[in-house]
Length: 368
Image 1 (tube, rainbow, N blue to C red):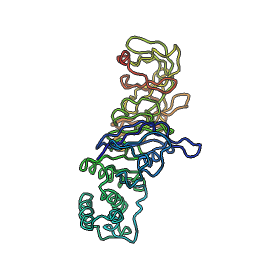
Image 2: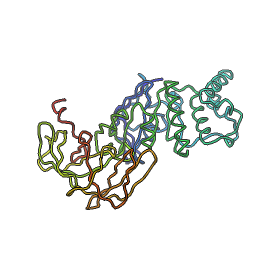
Image 3: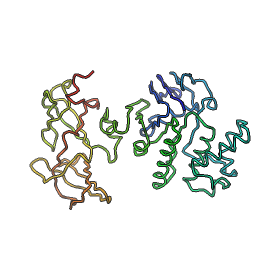
Image 4: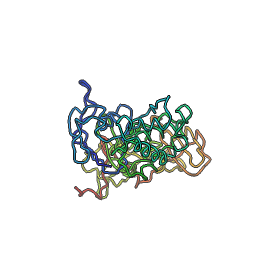
């Protein structure tokens, strides 16, 4: 196990700047997930850590050593790819032992490591099978075992579950989480699936256009997103956003005008914003309540999704230019075409300025 430090890391492919001044510290034994939309640079960043791509600028450290120029085999990392990349003519045992044999590891040591890894991953009864006789989940466990058998200091995962069906993804998420708790290894995991990020990570790194947008625990990113981008990316269903106009600043917060909802008194500090500033408010679906329509607070239900343990209600304002989602654990007799009023839980409303940065609560106004 070891820590990883990225100091002003940059990566250019020709004139295209992919990774831009990334600063990040990954602690010894942490499970860190890189998440973001396609093209944000998360897989490239993982490959820079693995040594599969050269660094254009900055310093990459593992423990106390700078590893910018070290080849992958000398970095002490094991990598699990999206494709299983198993040798079809080899048994499970031989696939897991392949890297050790290439490194000219003692034959007895190879056997001991493969058998111990197979025991941890519950592959002992599959060691004599060929990959074609395995399920997708079993093949992914073999790919993980091949990386683990080399006893790397750091395990890297590049979207390892994307080829599995939904039920297998849930099973493998639990397998990987259990593996981390058992080994205590430093693990870095790349995914575009924010559910995987939320359920696996000690710490999530949200990337956008090659830059770090926010770093924090799943709870921090969900409840205290730093930007509108993070607020919309983390959480399923996504956060509702509505335009707002700043009416006044007050000691305990601010007052804003929201089309369809009217005037709201919110606890955020908008003192740095000019009067009449255009803002955005964000409300998670579970923090939006429905009641009988009244006055201008009238939204039409366009769809109702019953999922068993919860219900999603999709609504449009009179203008019909945005779609809002209400999530409930109770099944009311909601139907498309009904008009309802929306009542946000004020303490859970987020406010974003014109540059999409979250405004702090007024009680934190004097905190540096």
